[in-house]
Length: 98
Ligand SMILES: [Zn+2]
Image: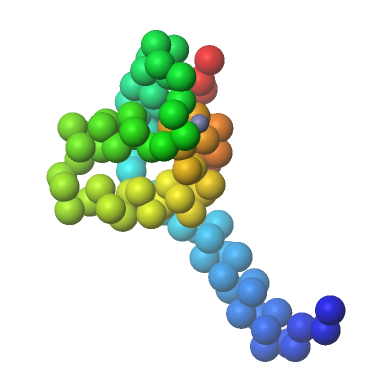
């Protein structure tokens, strides 16, 4: 592996900082409501490895033009199915799930 140049390091740091300060599209209240919905649904039905219930919730709770960007946000955080949304996403909000 080659050493990173000073410029490359700077760019990486900038990217990292931007990620740290990144604001979620969904508000904390909305995420809490989404998490609750997912918990209830996943108790009844096992996760089918898709964002089925997440998408369902988004469709009922968000304006259609926002849904795509929220799904992109969820993918970015490592949420590729409903249970991964609960496990991996919106950690900064520190929402309790049980
Ligand atoms: Zn899953």
